[in-house]
Length: 382
Image 1 (tube, rainbow, N blue to C red):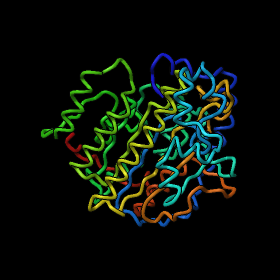
Image 2 (image 1 turned 135 degrees about the vertical axis):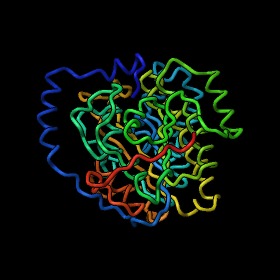
Image 3 (image 1 turned 45 degrees about the horizontal axis):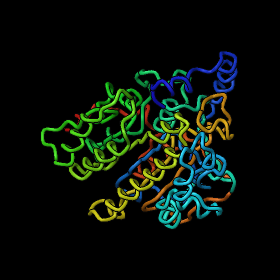
């Protein structure tokens, strides 16, 4: 995802031969329009939309819990005893509940989960690179752009769902973005649309900061690191404080530490962070369901930007030449989402189909993005 030395190594451009082959195949795919997703979800039932991502988190852990080989391997899990006591169980159904209790106790009962390839449900990115910038571009613009092949700081030329929503009169200045990874001002092209984005180790800027926001800023200044990815808990606290004060209708919250710990080959920390992500989503959902205006009126879409290697020796990397890197997943929860739990029918979903699907949840047609007059909206105070 990020531009740290570890990620620069693992997400460096693939050999030229692989790139040329990918370009040939991908150029063909560019001319195949993405079909609309046909899911058991009723469009237009929600007034609010929260999109949450956790970077590079594998479907394998989401649907089957901790991997037996990796959790017992001291090279990846130094304190195997403690981590096994927290996340290990011989039964996969119980094991995944230990790791992601909100997903399996709440979303599985009230929402939908896609991407368990063991059950026939498949989800993939369409871009050939299977890295972060291309993945987020696909997730938010519905395009698989050959020009976006790395995590370089380049402003995205493609119109994204968030700026499209913000350009609608009923959503003007009601869209907010918080991300742990500092590249989102480029991915969302803030210079073009002036979306309110708090990203990386940026402090919260507002003419009137709440006590919680002051606390986040103080902590950020104290622990600020030479990294493009801040701690997810700070991103979450900043986002939650903003939502409590400003009441946006659309929130994009992108968390990044699952990918950071995986690239560092720390399976123990990767599991712990996934568990933390689950807890943060649960906390946000609880707030939504106890707050007038959001209660029973807000859809959560939870997903990831790419997969990871599917073999024991390459779980910590991803990219164009790493098998399994394109394999992703998605969860839905909220009004209009039929409570069907884990989807087990034979079905293929692609990430580039999601922007139009997510827009439809609010009664909007993102397929009309190129002809829409996108107006620059004044940024909300941060």
